[in-house]
Image 1 (tube, rainbow, N blue to C red):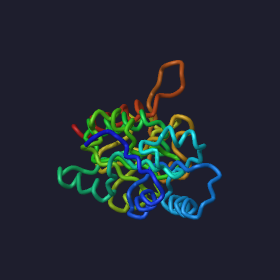
Image 2 (image 1 turned 180 degrees about the horizontal axis):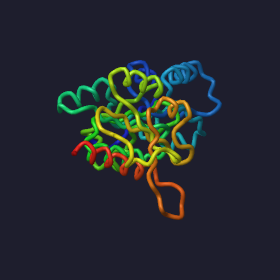
Image 3 (image 1 turned 30 degrees about the vertical axis):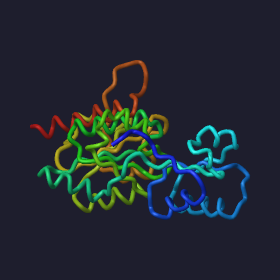
Image 4 (image 1 turned 60 degrees about the vertical axis):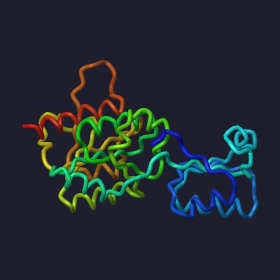
Length: 246
């Protein structure tokens, strides 16, 4: 599978792609364009939580490969998303208690790629990301994941809190990485587990945090106050791995 994101250009092609349920990560629309067909495309994109960028003609011409964009260019995910169900089946197939990464608002594609790579190496069964305010499976994510994206299923969900609640009913419990929690070495992290990682700025959102069973913090001795999100994910994931090996 190639690392290229797929560009879809022209009004009919873009509308067709949106309606067929293809995952469109981003839509570029000519700013100020009030044409009926373009309005329909924007309405359809909003229904699917697609990130919409209104840009000038110059930017569209730059992005265009066909030079026939008609004021709209969509960027489709470079990879197919999985369902949360597929991630659970993956664990079952391996005969292991589920181990899932839940990522809250990771906006940097390099971080997302690095976390998918870590998830794969730590033996996690999949990664769950939200549709809104987060990066999708772009070419940069794919490259940074060093191929892990081909093996580790990534599911995109509308509501992380609802997904966490559903997974709790299936016996998973959730640990969220955050300052001021219990030192991770003191927690029992065995069994079916979801590891929740937030972005560097705000950390895990309040609602998601309230739905976690434990808050784990990484002991830090340095002079700065936080770790990069993908490094934090790695440190915690490997504490889970260590405990699972015992």
